[in-house]
Image 1 (tube, rainbow, N blue to C red):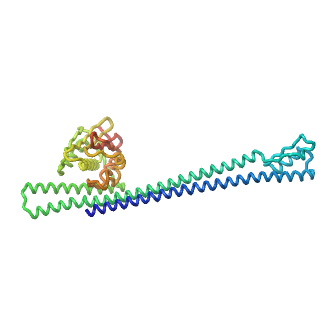
Image 2: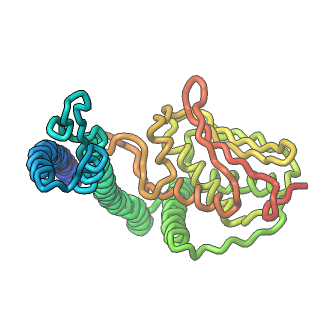
Image 3: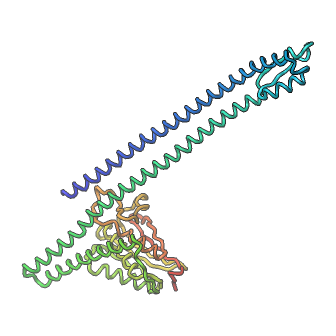
Length: 391
């Protein structure tokens, strides 16, 4: 009870950390949006002020040009409107001058104003800078958001992995202690009491079951470590796959006191090039998983058949349906379906991780399907290729 409370406390603490992290990242995201929005707005306002000053400078330049033209006219730098225009445009290219040719002396009657192109240039420069700041702001916000999301997901994955590892340690402790305690009790009973031959046989069978359970657990731990470190090297050889599957099922049933009905639907003489030890471990994990999550007195069916270049091996049970979200993560290391607070079935979360990785070495695929009206089907497809030859 104390360990369960510690477990629940640990999960609650991790959930609280995750919730706090979400709030921090949400506030940080709001701050970044507000900061970049203000930065963009401030730069746009600044450029509008620059645009306003540049327009005013053009208008002031018109006044300067008028004064200059009057002085040049008095100093007789030009004698007619053609020379006057040449002088004017040489000194004031951003402005334009319009003489009133109907007057007797048009050099004394003219209008100076900014050229339309000068206004357009200033306006286009303003628009270009506004778009530049908007695009820069959007790109920076997107990049920062990507960084924040990546950091958040990394942190979330780390917390999830930490939680899964914590659950794994609790589960593995239970998985080791329970059969050891049971075997110890059986041995003490044999030593201290005089039992009938039938009672002795029952105790020995139960002990063998616990030993088999420990053996499977240790094998899973070793193979998971080797797969995780990419040190598992499969040995492929052409095998009567039908016989291998059938014998593996029989050996799985023999030492166990199963309350399930095991049904074999095995097509004979299916030959595949496989790693026999890996196939045995794959089947043992799938059968153990089916037995663990299926109600008592239900059917577990193992089917094997060949269809052209594809060999299909399936293990089905009549347990609870698997959620779509769980189906996506079933083959992850340490992952276990269901709510950790209410889960009753014990396990390490390594079985299906091992199954998936061993099948990957065989270039085989595994699919999880719903069984009608209730249950799940784990279907494996071996395709004909250079490592997997059927005949």
